[in-house]
Image 1 (cartoon, rainbow, N blue to C red):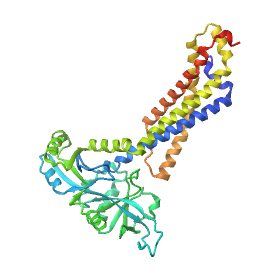
Image 2 (spheres, helix red, strand yellow):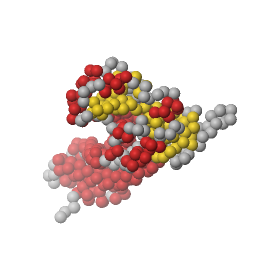
Image 3 (cartoon, rainbow, N blue to C red):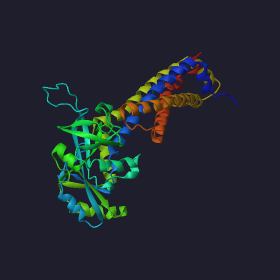
Image 4 (cartoon, rainbow, N blue to C red):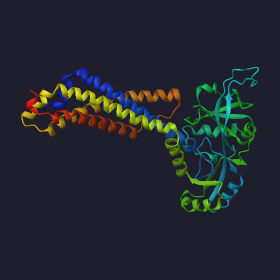
Length: 392
């Protein structure tokens, strides 16, 4: 079997090929990372909601995202409970407070350099384990153990994936939470994201003690559980019709879509990651064009010979595109190995849910092939415009 001309061209000048692979691989690694960050953004936007059990949810009409959920009156829950097909409606509180461990005096005259970090608080009724979807937890037994522990006032359970900057997080450790001192009673696992660096699970009473707001009266989320999930299509319109205009009712899927769309389209973070992929693509096209153009220029005599022998521009074009495709695939394999390592490093250092999904694998491969093919087509114009008689 004869070795394709494209492969021979790549092997003929190994150093140039290696440099090309490094440049293309760099662009592909950038794409892997930007898409990975974008995927982590989408995952983290809903990973807390994914662990709550509900078919539909009551939100304030002023709801922006999970970090700015706003509140609505308790009687909206009672209205929802009166709708046929609704099994129960559970209130949930979402809030933030400053955290410091180990606890110190918050008097600025005594401790002028205290560094506090913002901790997200999730308030639930510890006697209602059905608030959570056990199957969504990696360790469901932890959430079972967590609920009894938070019954004690000022006891909290902390997400073990909270940033290490929050300090020691083992059971028994005390911490400042606002103006109060709380005790860590255990750990569970949800994960952090771009909206919150840390998460604690608290009871309704502890939440009221810390923030001065009773989440049973001023509710952030009303989790609607239906008697049967199949009733959603009929119950949702009835629920929406019963509610006053200060609240909105969304299905589970609608809430997830709303949250993800907000983070991708409504924040600078999502826009930056999307633009990052485009910038990496453009940088790759420019780099590959320079390499391919230089290679074609050095081989004009060879291509002229082929044209003089009767080979068409189409044949030469296929050779150049094959060469570009080989470069893309080889660079892709190298960049994939590097990206997998960087994903793991990012998970460890930043706590972000970076996952190498098959969608990312396929998208980067297609972007790499498209990037190299486009560069090859642009560089190929030199050969197509040339007259064989002028090339010797």
